[in-house]
Length: 240
Ligand code: ADP
Ligand code: MG
Image 1 (cartoon, rainbow, N blue to C red):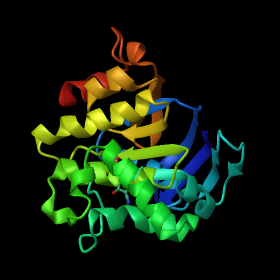
Image 2: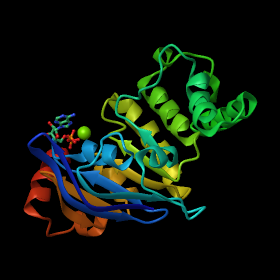
Image 3: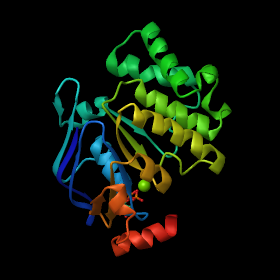
Image 4: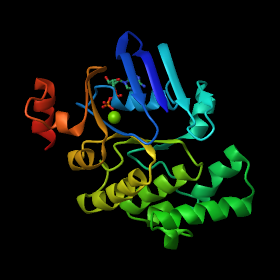
């Protein structure tokens, strides 16, 4: 569903991602972790075309239609993205935040957009907040709205970039539960997160990024097993 072939990304003279190769199959959940500044956000941003790449390929496939997308503008239509900082429009209601993209990108009419948005807001259990504005909601509620908003475009893949790291501890759980629900429904997911309990429970694979390279690509059993890579051991010592 997502294939990165020898992806390299530079900012000026600084090579931030080097020769990244990654394949994510339909329905797989891949957790990406690694030290701060290692290139995790850049990796996610390259997948959905928010950052352009210097060499290599980014390919996203639609498991339903079999279509293959390479142009960032096409990829973006099929990939849902959830950021650390929610990125909701504060001056639009929750409902309108969710209706905008389907109307603009997919060309669905207003009534249909409302129906889709309400269905997904209910799914993440914030349907009763639909007429409020984002700043009136808790962080956990806002992040669930952001997830609903991404789902409104019926994505084939969902990307998460540290979706719980801006949240107060008591709200982390409700967002992770929403993500677990999505995962169990078969959504293909790439999640940058340091929530290792979530990774252990949900991930098919855990990818450890260090200095712009994939150092480890392993199952949770291997990743948390007896003989971790020394860099992984250091990292786990910090986050667990
Ligand atoms: P992570 O998400 O793992 O913390 P990032 O992908 O945000 O790491 O950043 C990786 C490296 O790329 C860092 O050294 C960061 O300073 C650099 N970087 C990220 N975005 C930019 C940018 N827009 N311009 C220049 N350097 C950047
Ligand atoms: Mg980051």
